[in-house]
Image 1 (cartoon, rainbow, N blue to C red):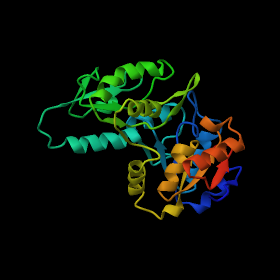
Image 2 (image 1 turned 120 degrees about the horizontal axis):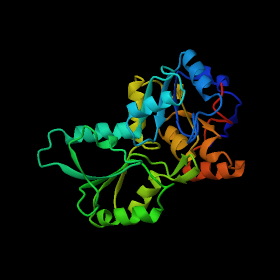
Image 3 (image 1 turned 90 degrees about the vertical axis):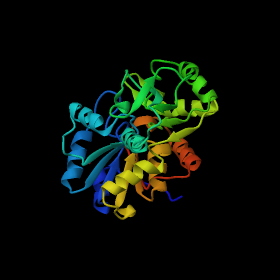
Image 4 (image 1 turned 60 degrees about the vertical axis):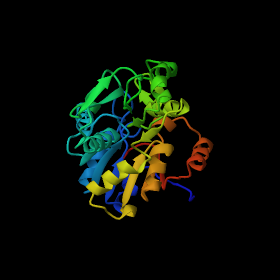
Length: 281
């Protein structure tokens, strides 16, 4: 792996790329508000003529995340598309459900704050029990509210029956108003530990990058740059898709040492092209 180049501002490399895939949590905002300069930086990058996709491991659909970002103070129109893993999964489930005539499947939905939007518009029946579910849709974690044992009790009956699980948020750590907590990806790992099978949608897996590059018109991958705070998801995902990347050292790696980051580069077999202290123009 090549050594990442340290830069102090995004404008130093902007001309090298035609499009940017930018992570939400840990780059643009934390669990409470936008990071300082993030709103302006996104506007300036768009004003420089770049195509911008906000690429997020959110189990919610794109439109809902789009509205939330504007409500937080980001400028509407300073990105071209807010693409979430939840959106990719919803579109997949919609296609898979078309033409199916053998009855409505029962879905055990794991979400946050009672959110039902991952099922809206799909011909699925929601169940609250893993004992009669046909599949599990793991969209979000409430790891700041419940311990992991809560999810083990909920999911064990489904895993025991061999019910498949679709995880639409692979992040194992999430940022909340109170700090970090285990994310939906950790719950998906638990499901595998219980003997269940998981299909993963989102970074670092291929489906979400295929959707993003399709939207961009299949550009030269070396002219596309991903910006994120997670080595496991953003940097490794970009490498698998043949894209360049920038690691922003806010978010989940804010307090990590250089040595700890190097260990993570080795663990996930991916190193960013650039390291940026924060998302600033």
